[in-house]
Image (tube, rainbow, N blue to C red; front, side, top):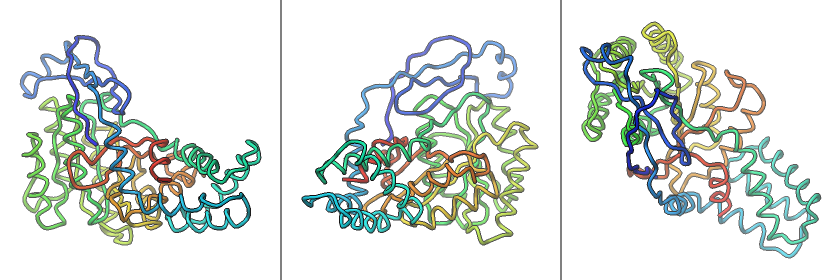
Length: 362
């Protein structure tokens, strides 16, 4: 769920900002006009955003509802009277059906058996809690806040296949950032899909933010212009929407590389975040997408969408295990910054490993 914050403004040196559900948020506040941004750069103030009460329990209820099928399937395993091979076989089947994949399933079963042995647990119902702990610990490296403020503007490049909910997620992320005090500029670099520019423009209007677009323009050119404009207007964040594509569309993947290269020319330290939006309904195919896009772009984070009743959720265990292998472009797990359970604005929230594990187990 998106949470709304009460703002308390204080003057202090500009600091790096983390967006998570526990920490206060600081956003550098500079004038929007290019004419005044340079004159005030040495006296910039920051806005400290104090979190109001957040109905996280309501979010947990929606997440649990979204993962209810997996939760019911896994919970049924622990209704027996003893812990034996049959229980572990049923659990193996349930984890595979939840899209955890073979390797993650084997990892979790081995870890669970060790926990059962170490704790001396004899009741199947108690094994469920041990499994929740095992899953949460596996997913913990994916739990990392999105950081804004170390660079101004922070350049965020967003990729994803068609239908994953990329542009919608950008709209929701824009609202999340804006609600936390950040000024956002959108770049409509998805010139490949019909009406993509118009769709992003709708989100810009809803969020009352500026957008840079060119009808039929080159995606890399739009991206460059957006970064230039973002810097001139003193924006905190430039969000670049790229064209949706499959990893097998090599010519389009090359275009993504070009966009990243051009962003680096516009801002040598950028892009500061390269996010991939994945559809939670696509199972192990989501892992294949993460691997392919990471190889091409070097991903820094994920947004997982559509965990809304048909998605099984176990693929995050596979993604976490893959991250532990050191096979990622960055040599570490690619974090999940946000997860979504529906189309509504409040259906996108920061990822918490323990919450997700509990929801996964019903």
